[in-house]
Image (cartoon, rainbow, N blue to C red):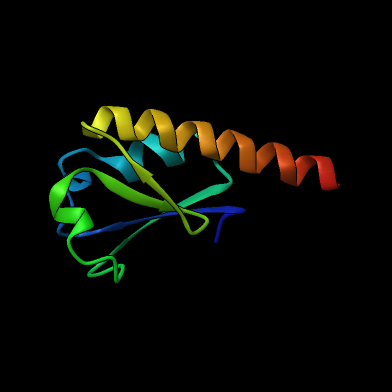
Length: 84
């Protein structure tokens, strides 16, 4: 398991891209998990959506959502490294 966990619902628009391949290749300390449901019913059907360490991330497109995911991952990793 990674320091940062990104979760997506398998019914979400984020499944249109290889999020696991993209994020895990850029960030070795990040785990991407695809779940059958994240218990945020309705959100994942409306627009691209993910949870990053339980923080909700939305975008108008999967690419915009990925950019926001990267920003939060950078923040989370910086906070982790500051604590060391």
